[in-house]
Length: 348
Image 1 (tube, one colour):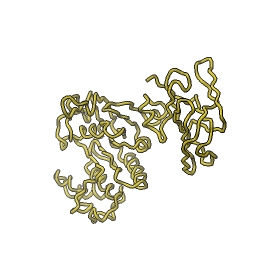
Image 2 (cartoon, helix red, strand yellow):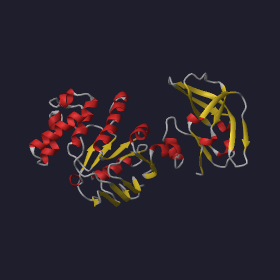
Image 3 (cartoon, helix red, strand yellow):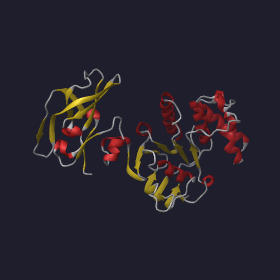
Image 4 (tube, helix red, strand yellow):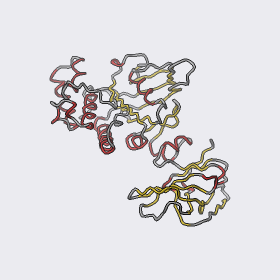
């Protein structure tokens, strides 16, 4: 199945949203281009402005500054019905008294789409989402994952220019979230449609987005491909937010480099021993033999083990991701050995 409507990009130009005079902007100077057919993810902690940004694209919120265009058409002040978008919410928002078929076809009926066209779109979409056997059921007879598929189907049959997702998996259990995550990515591959997806879950962002936009305080902190954000975070906020466990941030005094050093847990080895040895090299980098520390917590996860330790220097916390068969115990004295070739340096 493919979307027959025109794929459209979305452009933001200095978009701002202030809810009350004197308050800090919920969204501040947001400027970004979403390419036609792109899967873009907005990610950040609660209150960072990501959902507000999405709602402004949908027309559910109006910007207090700047402009938004879809497919080259300025939609900044247009009502939602005139924007050619479809939105999927976290609470499904299905009509409880309507069957799956009726829920999926309702918006098309309001637009006076011919009955045979409605039937074609609903049947094709139901087959794509594995809902054919459930078309005559009411929402209460469906599982959470099936209801979310119906919400997706209701959006797909409209064949919009842009799909908007507002944390659609938040109400599902962990197993179902993983399954639906993959389903939405497959759906994007099949439809080739423009999709903007909002989540607070950085794992969803990393695994789903072709490009992710990390937000904090209403501002864009970094916009890039997932691995670019992971390997080369733009600042300390991005470094600490993206990644599970988060990147280790060692303050300047730990390695005497005059700036904060970031090292991912998978790039830290844990060795047995009492003392460390730092050796300054001519090019200004540091070869680290080991930083003395005490193990604070061990989290065995099967294939890998997460080791939390506290460095002797400044009682700085440090995390390592090591093989699952590593023999490390709580309270043990160890050397935390960061791979300085993979380190990231921050001036702020």
